[in-house]
Length: 104
Image 1 (cartoon, rainbow, N blue to C red):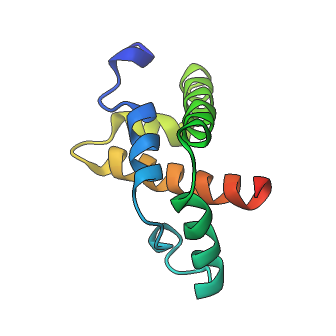
Image 2 (cartoon, one colour):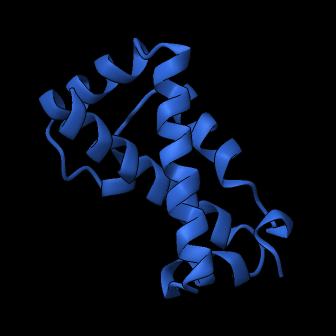
């Protein structure tokens, strides 16, 4: 299987994550309300260029994980039904939080 033939497109998923209000659900509410509000305030005001920078980082990370056959990524790729897609969506949301905390 080639990266281009995955059952989902990580770039599109990253764009979707950037377009959704941040709720903290992927961390099972381990962040407090103030932390969630901070992440959401930054995300809500991202420019097209900022979204694109994050999407590019996600794509590079996913391509690297695929090339290395990283177990977490291969689980996402090979899962039946929507499980793998949903897991990767949660990973990308988690990455967005880390990206915002680190860069903003």
